[in-house]
Length: 452
Figure (cartoon, rainbow, N blue to C red):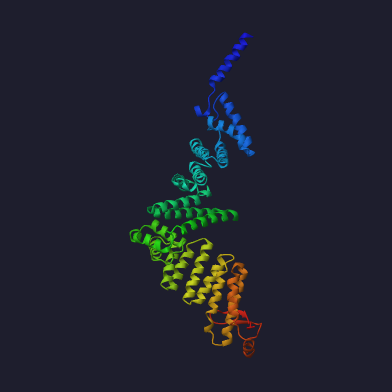
């Protein structure tokens, strides 16, 4: 019996001597009694955290977080929630700052132990840390935002396109603040804008559901709003900002592409810098975007047929049907301005074929018809052209109800130009309510209608 007691005592001393925390030996759970303690506290905090009972979970989580920090990445996912819960319910300023710093330390420790975690590596964690810093700092607007901007820069530059949508809007807001504090940051601010919008464009192309697309579109709108309100986005400022460097960069394709993209995004496509950058880029490496820029330049010079040629190149160089529709419609408007109505109609119909629910091309065709009445000598036939124009407006309304008001206004104006009933009666070639084939470039049937 005495020998048995001695043996048990020796065994217990051995276990106690072997006990070691994970934080001490770098292991996942530690060893001996400490590993048992770690596993028990992991289980207990998870049970309560899943129920949202952070008050009870806190004690067990703190032990596991402190003693076996490499045990599980969930320590940090749930830990951020627990520290945020503490922070939001606290009213004492000193304690709030204590809990805020503890939350930031959760992210630092996560990077230390799980910075290589494949699904959410170090750059992703910096993004999460920055967003919480941005939104939860106890000093609010008076806090130093530079750390968050630096962490978000890491996230934006190193995260995959699919990771962490929530980083983009705060990142750009902080970029705007940095620019306002230091005017020398203006160029970097523009680069930040282009970088974020390019990533969001990529994300939009990868989006599979309407809900996902709507969310990304909302991020883009938020960022555009910040950029527009920054004071940098007006065309005069951008023209002045980039004009000085244009000639020095006329062989720098990446710089030229950036300028073309920027000026198009903010709708500064009527500026000399945009025209020149597009032409230089097109000379170096033709793309749909550079061809579009050259087309705008031709439109400015009233070289409408040449603009259409550039847009034909743009159409051929893109696989995106929405882009094709955009280029076809722009070509139609250019040719309309040049009174090349037949060609303009062809491009307008092409635009409608590329994009479902696209009503603008039909409205444009209606305006072409209304502008063509002088091509007909017979006064009754001239007024029947307005019937054909109304046909196109009715088509536009059926394609997209959102244009109803615009179309209805034009329809009312065009109906005032219908022939009178007595004029139709006296014309042997037309009958009220019957089809009539308009000649000339229109070459289309319409129903003879009269002014009421």
